[in-house]
Image (cartoon, rainbow, N blue to C red):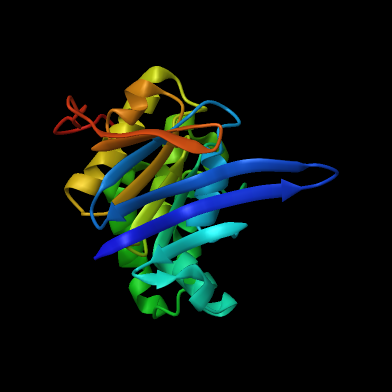
Length: 238
């Protein structure tokens, strides 16, 4: 059973004129896959991500999550899936200012319904998984860009989501920090089994994935397996 299936997705923004953003996009994502969605600015990849993450709805077509149409879920159910089964990593980190690493990573637990006596262990495990145990009590504003993104990743994975959406996660980082972030994301897929959907315009970043879907002008130009996948190293520096 596919985790995600989109069928002939179309998205048209209507202002004074109609602007098509997606034009007949169809593909499947199996549980445990690592997929990169590539395309230049304005190609429709961010629009697609918003629909996949239940942040927006298509104008036409269908989106099935866990074999059930998006249209069959209530708004409350969509919110529950988004909070518990989906994790999000953004280019801009979206960390809480004036709070430390621990408090930032803990945030999704506040709305999770999980007993709070389990929180500390869960937070520490997530922080350890991204190699930041030595930064637990550091204020988020005092971290480097790469460290901030690691915090965002730990926050995204703390509820062990079925799928993690990574939207240009290396866009604000230098090449060395970006490489480390991609190694962590790849490890989440290979060692922890998270399904990853990566949005990027960089070929080198995309080649960490198992499969690359290229979108041009709102339509899929190609959907191919990566022959020479970049693999994460066995360790990363703290």
